[in-house]
View 1: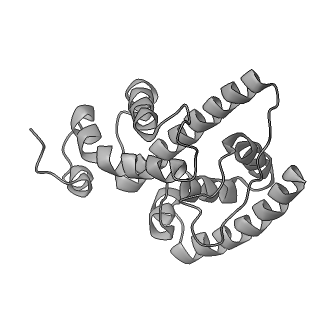
View 2 (view 1 turned 180 degrees about the vertical axis):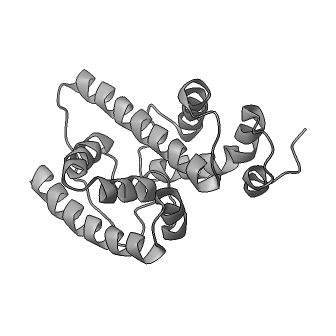
View 3 (view 1 turned 90 degrees about the vertical axis):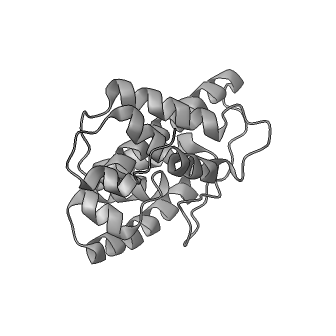
Length: 185
């Protein structure tokens, strides 16, 4: 039977956080996040949104923290897992194709939470390089792109001001666009 608790109240009431209840409350939101990644994918893609969410559950149950500070913290951890799952899947597919056809990776100025690109391996490689340049901005990108978090939620996760996050997002987006254009050229 579904719980009457909301995901927000789950973290605010100070009680213990039973993982199965958390997953039940978070499922639809995680499913929506995963759906964003597959909107532009071909119908016969070998990884589907439901499978991605289930894999996130498995990884969080096995490797996730025992307690989450708040909703934003939970979704930040889930976003990191989604990123890794998508990258691992992309690498496996590319390994099978031995290079295959690389697809152009673009950054949409407004809606990176629902990306118009599908090569998560290339994006991950660029983010790894970016992490050596500016780890803080790299984390902002990860939370925005893979977690779909708002500037306010990112600010809470990273313990910084919302305006700092927005400025960082603008700077990161410009750097990433330049790097992604070099990668696919």
